[in-house]
Image (cartoon, rainbow, N blue to C red; front, side, top):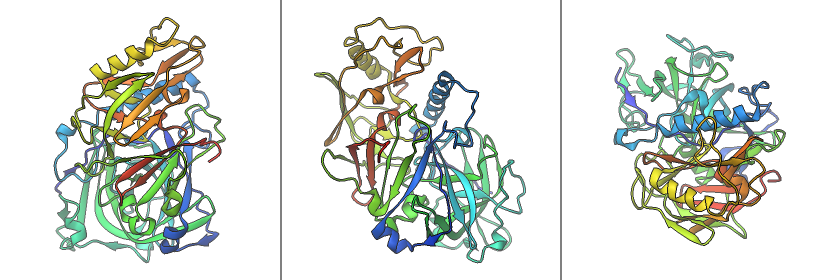
Length: 441
């Protein structure tokens, strides 16, 4: 079986998508385009999350979020991305979201790691030659009346790049390998994928391409069954349902360490439109791999000091930063990050303290930072003014700024996205930001 390497960043903050999947009513995908629908987002460290550990302290949760950011950063080196890669590397066990969707007729619920930096949807299937342990039963394609294997000599098979054909039956097979040595091999297929919504209505999408995994392994948690790709590539869920949602989705992230009972939401179709007073928009840069959502960062201002951004390993001009809901911190090239933090520290009337774990680049004793400077992110055509909760995190002992130096990568992390309604329009190729109280959204 020929492998194609799926190279990944590490996208979307430490939050989980949780869908209720009540079969109360069904709306068509056409209705979904006009009416829109929304899905609940639950923070990874919420008691609602299957990853929740009640024995962890706020300090431990903060450190774990930091380390997930650094692990994800290691997957953003585009020097290793081939021109025909259709996915990106992720770390499934520390992915930013879990998303419940249903596959098949009748629908069978799966729980996959969801990420804007990954495209292909896949789940473990029965019979399985080699599977990692999962709590839920394996998906059995033989019990779905709408399941079809994709033939080798089809545009659906060839459009994914490097696929292979089985010796028997001429079925298209996929190979997904990840930077942490996780993998999934199996049949490329089509079936009905059903999404639920916060209204209790379910939305079916027929003939959706997904991978039926027959041999899977690596660092997957037993709470998960596979991956749900939300990236910009042709095989992602976002792209495949694009005609029904007009290519629009948005989310509003409750700030880190907010009350656990308050959920975030992701919106599709007409619900995903971001408009009204205070909205600023910036173009998405058309770059490869199409999985990633590239923006162009021109500068960052600290007070009235404007620090021009010289570029990153993603490029020196257009598309020099990736917006990622799975990365907690905001990652910047080392030299630029040092200049930025130097400007920040000049506004703080307190002495910096050493982070005992040496995770963060600029920290102060908790309570000593009474005010933070106004920090503005200057994207092409959009000035995004940040609040205190967007730039500083505290575990009760120390307070640290969320900017982290790297060897060249630039990632717009999820803490900086909190309390903004952020909309993606993949048809117009724009990303919009609207200051919003996400606890009330």
